[in-house]
Image 1 (cartoon, one colour):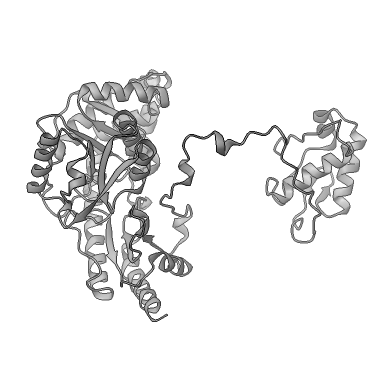
Image 2 (cartoon, rainbow, N blue to C red; image 1 turned 30 degrees about the vertical axis):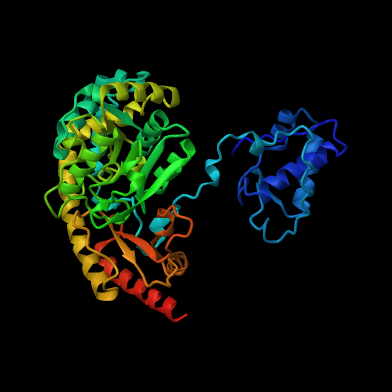
Length: 490
C-alpha cells in the first residue's frame, strides 16, 4: 500500500468529507491510483489529516456507494476494478489560475522544449520489426561477464572508488583503459589529462558548445546531420550554417570556410553513412589551420567498422590540437550506461572538467569502475568481435533485402555501422510511411528530422539493424516495400 497525501483546507467552503472524496476520486480518474490498488485505512487517513475518523468513513462510504471503492473483510478498501468503466464521474471544474501565479513561459530565457527532436517509442521491443537505431540486441550482450565486473566493482577492494565523491576527477582505471585500448585503434595518442569522462557523447557535445560558442560564434555542421547537435548549437549561437553533404562527407562551401567551429561525423556520417576519405580529411585540417577553426569530431560508431580498414580519425591526423574527439561506449555496450569521453588539449579538458563539476560533478563511479573492469579483463574486445560477426551478417542481409525489394533506394555503407539511409520515391512522405508501418509492427525512423532547412525533403528514412533479429530483416523490408508501393498508388 502506498502512502497517499490528501490535502484539505479547513477554510474552504467545501466540507472536509467532500474534499477527501474529491481528492481520492481525482487520483483514481487521473490514473494515480490503479484498479485493485489498496487505499489507506480510515484510521490512518484520519490520523494523517487530523480529522475525525467518522468524516473519513462517510467519505469512503459515499465512494463505495458510487462504485469507486470496494471493501474487503479484514483487508481494507481498494479501488474498484470497474471504477473507470461503470461510473460516469462528475469531475470538479478546473480551478481558476491564482492571481499571483508565475508566468513561467515569460521567465524562460531559453525554450529547448520548443525544439524538434528525434522521438522513439519506449516499447520498441514489442514491435515485430524494430528497425530502430541506437538500441542493442540483448541476446548479444555478455550479461554474465558484465554482472561479474559489477560484482567486483562493488566489493570491498574498491569500496572507496565508487562510494566517495571524487568531485571533478574520473576513475583512473577507466581513463587508462580508454587511453591504452580504445584510442590507439583510432590512431589517437593522448595523456590522462587530455581525456575527460562524460555522461555519454551528448554530455561531451553540450560541454564543448557551452565553452566554445557564444551568441556571435559562427558554426558549421553537416546537412543532413545530427538533430541534437543542431539544437544544442542553436541554444548558444544565432549563426549555425548547414553545410551540404556529398558522397565524401561535408563539402567546402563559403559558410564552412567562414566558420569558427566545424562539427562533423567523418567516419560514418550521421545519418547518410558516407565515409570521408583521407584526402578530404587532410583538406579539412588544412582549411582549419588556414582559417583558425576548431573541429569537433563525433566518432559515434567508432567500434562498428567491420567492412574495410578504418580510416584514421581526424584527431590522429591533427598536428595543431584543433580537433576535439568525442566518443561513446553506447554502441558496443548499451546506451543506458551513459558513458562517453572527449579527447582534446589539456587546457580545454581542464575547463570542461570544471564545467562538468558545476553540472554533475562526475559520471557515476560504480558505472565507471564496472566499465573499466569490463575493458581491462578483455570482455569488451570479445564483445566487439562478436558484434562484428553479427553486424556483418545483418549488413549483408539488409543490403540484399533492400536491393531486392527497394532497388536503387540506398547505398551500402562502406564503413559498416548499424544502419542504412534509404531514399524513397520523390512524393513519399516518410512520416506517413512510419505511421502506416508502425500499425503493421514495423518501426522505421523518418529522415526529415535530420534536416535543418525550412523545407526539408520528406522521402528519406533510416533502417537500423542492431536490435532486430537477422531472420526478420528480409520479411520486414519486404512488408515495408509493399507499404511504399501502396503509398505511391494512393
